[in-house]
Each structure stands twice: as structure tokens, then as C-alpha cells.
Image (tube, rainbow, N blue to C red; front, side):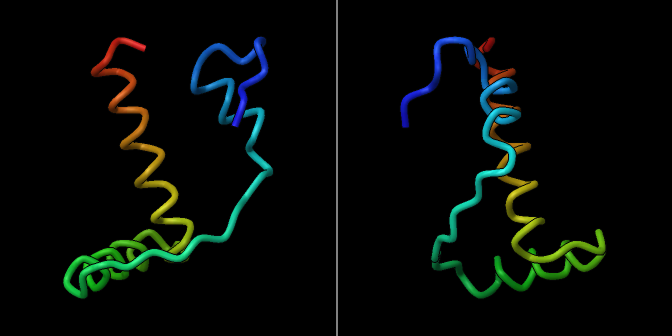
Length: 68
């Protein structure tokens, strides 16, 4: 996906594409899925929303680590 020139960092990119969502299918190990389901429930969140939140946090951590 080409990023418009005005969107020069991940935060701006995520805000720009906030409403866009794409369905995907992934395979998870059963123990991982079981734990993530518990964590999502504790946050009163759907599994999909919780996985999205975890991935977003991971990407933000990578940005900080890499100085972006």
C-alpha cells in the first residue's frame, strides 16, 4: 500500500486509515489462543479487537525501539 506523502510517520498513517478494516484468517497455537481469549475477556473486549490492540502496541514499541 502506498502511503500518501503527507503521512510521514506511523501515527499519521494509522489515523488516516483508522476506518479501514480487512478480514484476515490466521492460525494460532491453542495455548496462545486460550491465553489471548482470557486477556480479551478481562479487558471486556472482543478477541479481534484485543488482537488488533496487541499488534498495534507491538508496532508502536518497535517504532520507539528503532527511533521512529
